Image (spheres, protein in one colour):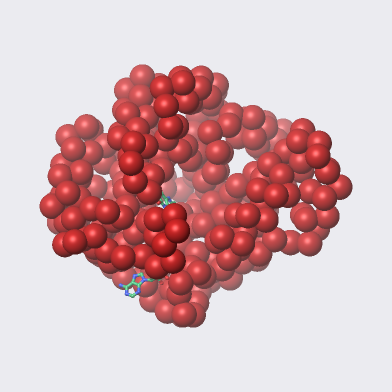
Length: 288
Ligand code: FAD
């Protein structure tokens, strides 16, 4: 089912994001995690696409497992990194032939060590080009794209970034999923600015229940996302106690999601880091 049709039903959607494990043992672990998560009936799940190498094949493998074996609606991610146009068209055909109708279309990050994104020979430079390529190849694809409430780190300004987001939507993207954020006001401001620019598709907040202060600082620095002082303090107070830090992360995410849903967000997408615990705790917290 195209995810856009689910959003059109008007109820908030719950979605979860997996990443492809490196080896078969990891896939077995993911199968277990995903099986546990069936209980909370996510409306769809997504599977990220690696920067290169073996995990790229695993996106296909894991997507097929989640869809075929476990019955989820699955949205594989696809990026422009390292692919020519012809390769991307081939990937589009394979994804389509595999029965998938939803794709998260991204540019991708520069490979580790590189500071700037370089398109592959005869490849694509921006995600809007990937959206256009996928739509031209298979008009029945339903495409999600990334959005950045606190600006993409490479964008010269928020205005320029919003113009580029508009290009992706004009090229045929059906919804936007945001980069993680910890302050809902950043999301609300972003949605207002999107609407003012004529970006009218659902903007789904991306939420990451954090696991530790270290990990959170790493993510926020890498992505240019603000880390609220209160959250930092709570994680500091948890110290080396991983269980307490995880509980802080779940608590913060739960408060964020409650507020987002109360303020009309079209759902929430959880970066679950291949762990069942936080997603199950969030679902239980929301049901309570
Ligand atoms: P673009 O939309 O192409 O934007 C990149 C930069 O270029 C921005 O600064 C933008 O303002 C600018 N820009 C865009 N279009 C134009 C244009 N036409 N002209 C001039 N400038 C332009 N990465 C992975 O490798 N695999 C994943 O599975 C993955 N999943 C993600 C899921 C989500 C929901 C999000 C938000 C990000 C994900 N990422 C993933 C990270 C993503 O690849 C990076 O953030 C990347 O740096 C930008 O990708 P994009 O699709 O937003 O790029």
